[in-house]
Length: 253
Image (cartoon, rainbow, N blue to C red):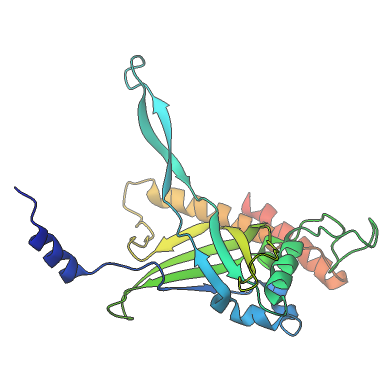
């Protein structure tokens, strides 16, 4: 069948084309930064300063296998890997964007030791790691259709936190250029509009599925309990942590 320019134009006109400048980024403030709102007001308006974001690729990892035990290797899927999510933010005139990401990074690992090796920041010693439930958050990237604002494609990320706060270029050459800050985010889970949502499998008679799910659920409860254990701040808090440990031990009985 010969290629038809008129048919090509007709199909493009019928379906339209998505544009890469119609997007919106929403980042939830992690608990560690909620107390910084008065000092960094721009943190509530961060989505308006996101200049660009690269939507992540679906990176399926593979392993080489030999189906017959010899001969050429054949690639087989072995898992999935989430790449770093890069974004670029414009820096406001009060440098609030810089302050926010530097504070956020410090909540992950306290890199400051200007007061000495025993000087803490928010009860964290130099290079002490924070608790993930304090610095991780959610992030949403929505891209829109130019033909209708009601049509959107949404990427939802959870367990999000920055792993790279990049270089800021200062130069005398272009006085009209806006200062920008590149940031790389990592995340635990990804949900997109085009993917199906999972459902809990039913416990079928004669199947090991239900027993496995109950066992897995108990392991998940243990993990959640472990993640909830934090540094005690008083006697009552220490008692609660001991109770949590008792709950874990009872799960193995």
